[in-house]
Length: 240
Ligand SMILES: O=C(O)c1cc(=O)[nH]c(=O)n1[C@@H]1O[C@H](COP(=O)(O)O)[C@@H](O)[C@H]1O
Picture 1 (cartoon, rainbow, N blue to C red):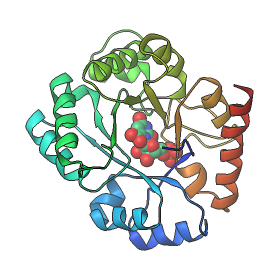
Picture 2: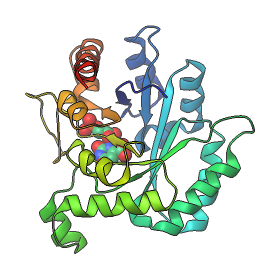
Picture 3: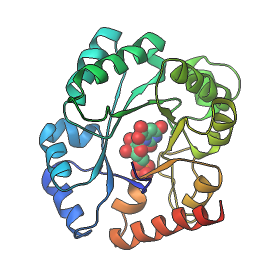
Picture 4: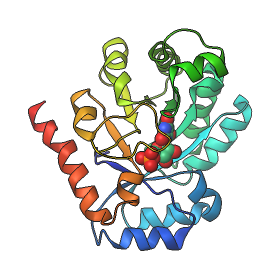
């Protein structure tokens, strides 16, 4: 898997997605299909993206009883996506079941989709977590706890903000993947995100992948916004 910036295709349907992708001509991308687009278009959008040789992160954030997650993951593995995810809050048994489902649904001779767990959403703050989830202490502690649980369950990595990456890599090893949304340019609008960082900062902090939505999809010139973000992300890579 190449570590291109992952573009969040948060669009209402296939035609809007095709319009958007046409701006990138024949460039091969790493894209993320989330709930909005998948619930509208189903497997057809995944087939379309794979036919066009894009790498695909299917972000449905599964969170249910182990048996249900296992069966759902078996189906998702059949779509031959490159990456998919669950909520770590579903627990160790659920995460293990997710992997069992993915393993059993992976087409023979193909690679099992990378499976990562959402720790605390990047739209969550410490005070919100304290009040609404009744988890005490700093948010970083909860993120690290969920990351440890995901690793114990056999998952490949986590979704977190760039701000927690270095703690996770120090504690759980540099091979444990960190996929980080909440990416904004220095002068960008944070929208509903709380724990944000620029692409340069994400690389500096050791993120393995960045996920970028509105900073690209909402730009006047999405191709140029993508190229700027990609350069910023790769620029720092040379220094590392
Ligand atoms: O799992 C995700 O991808 C995800 C986890 C998380 O904690 N925060 C988060 O923003 N995301 C997704 O990453 C994307 C971020 O979009 P923008 O805020 O527009 O860049 C959205 O598609 C979110 O669904």
